[in-house]
Image 1 (cartoon, helix red, strand yellow):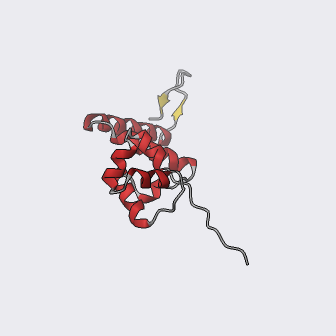
Image 2 (cartoon, helix red, strand yellow; image 1 turned 30 degrees about the vertical axis):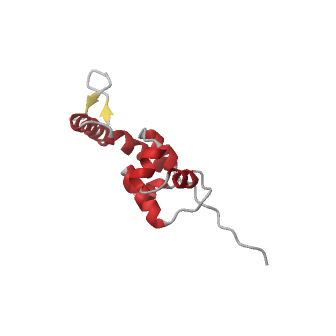
Image 3 (cartoon, one colour; image 1 turned 90 degrees about the horizontal axis):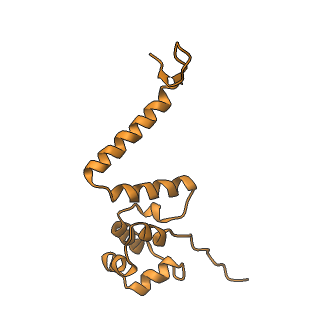
Length: 123
């Protein structure tokens, strides 16, 4: 009977760290790991336990689930969160207002106006 091997899930630690412009040394120090331990985890050369996974997630200010490669939508949301956290409070407020405006436009479709022009909202 052969040995059973478990395939390690692909982690997004390196990509999130690079998006946030954090060095491997800095992340390792914040997460309580050595740089070599973090390197081995990032490259999937060594399995990571839940304690280390949580400490890395906390250091990156993400949820542990965000560290796992997932759907394209999940990756987009994670990237959006990383970028959003780099903004100052005024910029965050502006971005949220813009997003709310976009969502509102989707809910209230534009129709042709009386004069036949597009872009007039339904009264």
